[in-house]
Length: 259
Image 1 (cartoon, rainbow, N blue to C red):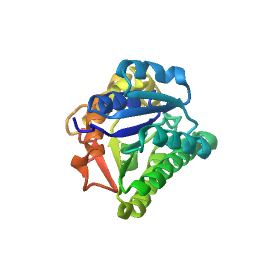
Image 2: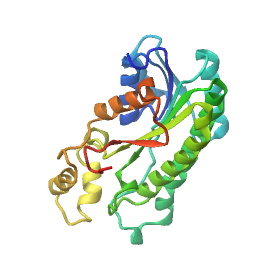
Image 3: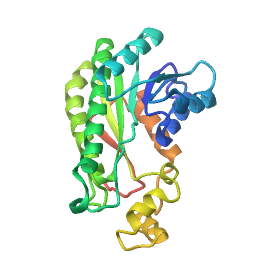
Image 4: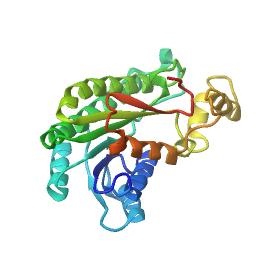
């Protein structure tokens, strides 16, 4: 098991990606601490993992004191944290051109992403530096590299997150702390059959199935990455097998982006 003996905090663990990562991390031997806005949403994931390897906590990731209290409590309970993974949703609005998008809808994902990732990543960096090791992780998406229309502030938010993580990687690297992120093309299971399609297809003048086909054809593999594939890649990056990787994005876009 690649993460045997590791302790991981997963922020946003109740979400589609967060839940998938939590399950695979636990399968690979990690003790997972699931953080989210409501305990009720986290409970099914913890129950599915079962045993003493899953713990839940209500954490407000926009509040530095809440993040720090939780991190310190995990350290006290587990003895330390090896992996911190922020998978919090960005509450972005898509499907409208920027010229017609209200400022508050544009700024919301940027402010939320920048704030929560700064607070969770820097809390992790402080604690991990004391132990001389650890991995800080995040998830971004293809609009950081591709000029895609109708994504609102989502692309800018992902770019802001990546920019902060690059700086943190430079500062934390000499202290033994790695900083990496996964860049995904989006998994169909995470947005359901209608949400992403309806919001983007119609403004683009395409039918729902046509729009999804356009997105598929943008990838070299002619498909989207499945949630489990994203989670499996996350395991590798979080493990000691990737001990020489930092300040880097793992490309899990099925070839929508070519490095």
